[in-house]
Image 1 (cartoon, rainbow, N blue to C red):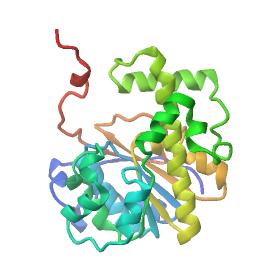
Image 2 (image 1 turned 60 degrees about the horizontal axis):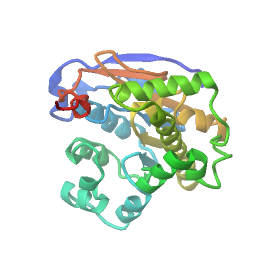
Image 3 (image 1 turned 30 degrees about the vertical axis):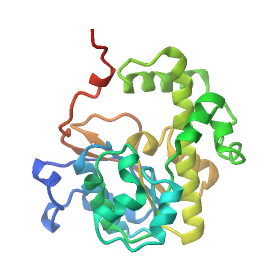
Image 4 (image 1 turned 90 degrees about the vertical axis):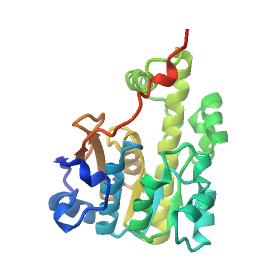
Length: 274
């Protein structure tokens, strides 16, 4: 499939409060057509932007995937969910242990869960694996699949430096220099675990597969698509990024723009009180 870039502006703050009707679709027809033609649709997000989740819900309804891979759900949580019929958000929260996960409120994500009845595949990296990646590297944390997913190959010095700079900026320039390689290792591990879940979902369900994840994992230049290109070069993968007032990092096939969500200063937690 020919690569393309589509920039879409979502206008109006009211869409963040309710599911859009037919006259208020958030994703235009050409972008939706590209998603329907894909084997894998990676739906990026800024985690705490409610509009981004409405876009994801609309995309899932149109794509009708055979499986949905979630960055926010563990494999254990997905297995528990497969054994239960969930009829309300409280039950879903309990089954997935959402309150303990550290993600934004489930109320933001519930429209996305409602949009598809397809099996849920969990790809959240457990804390123990994240610690292993920090201490011993992403390859050790992933285990036997490390070479297959390219984690045994170090990044080029230029790429490593670029990713460390991104991690420093994402953490408000507050991380010590020695932690930056560890944060890059965790990010690579998360990319690989997400890609592995996509491969398993495709093998088990036949596809198409959708992925709910942050923009950093959705980007074409270093995220999940790079792993899938290595593992399944014949697949049609569409990477969707969601920007806020035009701001986004990385390369995507489709960029959907929404207003910036109201939030507290994310750097306030890093400020030292004198």
